[in-house]
Length: 231
Image (tube, rainbow, N blue to C red; front, top):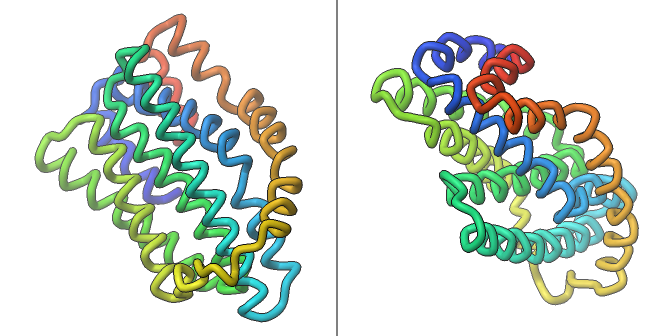
């Protein structure tokens, strides 16, 4: 929150309101699309991890969660490909990789908490925020970059957080054939499937107004609204 507050003058002075409005508009859409396509997988992952004892049992949850995450990435890529053919979406590659970064940042954060590594989760979050801030300050403040830097800053911060948690927990080592379980995969799916309804409901309550403002008043108005709401 403090990092976001200190970045307010940078955003307001260096970025046009319509650019910031477009960024927040796409982030709003990405949040609901990823939450729906990925069926809030990170919520199911932490629930199943906390219910199991021992590294082997937890590794099975991680393995099957990553399998579902991989399938979700393919679905998101398909959606992005269709959009690129049907609609002229500005900065679509940045938006797509922002969505993937959001998915794996959420998932790895749940892994860390599910393993009881709350300190690693906290440290990774701080590192992510610092990297996000530095990228914005350097590439927008010093080099005069545009809205694409906002996407890249988040992606870089998420990559650092995921990388830190991976180094500390060695989660990719769990992706082995013996850890894959169709039964556990089905359990995860059954638990997570209803969660996208919660995701959609929360989105309607908290973010739908941004789409209305952006669609009726324009991205400039949405940028002003989003900045006031965020800070």
